[in-house]
Length: 469
Image 1 (cartoon, rainbow, N blue to C red):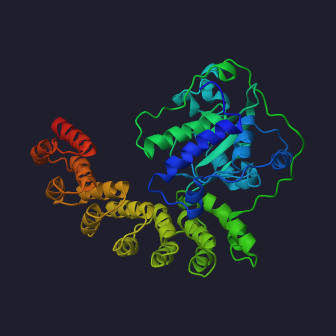
Image 2: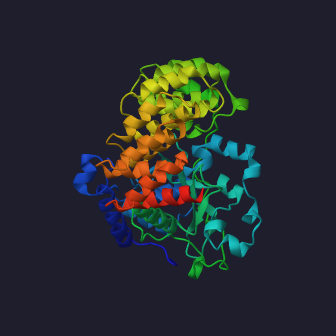
């Protein structure tokens, strides 16, 4: 794609199609969204966009402005992005989340300098490999456009240091599980790539096409790039708060201050580092976790116990599993804390937690933790989940865990190759290769005649794996 979407007509056509396709999936949306067939909001006015540019001190790219004039924000683009922000919420990353940038300074060796050691031509080719390389100094000056799902760090960013001749800022997708970032020549390119990813993952559309370079026109590798046009100083940026100060604000008398502190702390949620613990915060965070404060505030305290707590944080977290409001967040915190601190409290608590159906993310995380413990009780839990009417990913997670920890897994999985539920047959066919038992080959050969194409695909993969090993 060698041009961007710069008109509201083009954006409306794409976003309406995307809305209809989202609403055709099993994902939950509000009655209002379903009634209006629209995941967006009312259009932003020229006055609102002018105010945003004045607040930031920069003239924004045409594709973003046209998007906002079509919908002032957006509810969902993927499983990792909760929303694209409205004009009043778009903010510089260093203002929104300065502590996140501190992490990048601490681990500077994992970032890249100018052009990441590759040529300028390759850097601006935006091929899959080159797009993951980035200039770490640009990260610090980027503009944040999105909110991640709770407990994640995914984000859409715009880079004012790289602007093409048509005024488009370079766009980035950041997520903790990818190396570097994924760079695109414009906001429009980024959103189109997210749409194609949606078609592939949510709709299972094999015809989805990735938006990758090299591009032509003003986005060609040899074309001139410059800094964004500065309109003025922008709004004064506030002082950075420490973790201790933010935790203190979780108990502030003002609900607004509490929620803002929680918002910042949730973005601080990251894998536990035993060298960066805050033992003195365990007690106040535990008190907040078990208080009657707002959901966001309690979740923030929960996540911080997982990131900055120590062994003493295990007991209050496990108790939190009994509270349905924050239990899912507790599992996320234990997932990180468990890396360094093993405890029967954790395994006992998670076995109780999984005794009844839970949400997909926390169920998978709990299964992974129990698998690390080689927990014998996980066998019955995994079998129950495998046989239940549940999400495909959850069922696969349970099936693979069963294959890893149970001596009778092969027999159980072979038995389920003839289950009347195609989803159960598919998960069993996939997990059976993890057992590495060749006696499953004959059962797999028989299952090659399965009527469901997804089952047959997993049978073929497992059969090939077992025959080759």
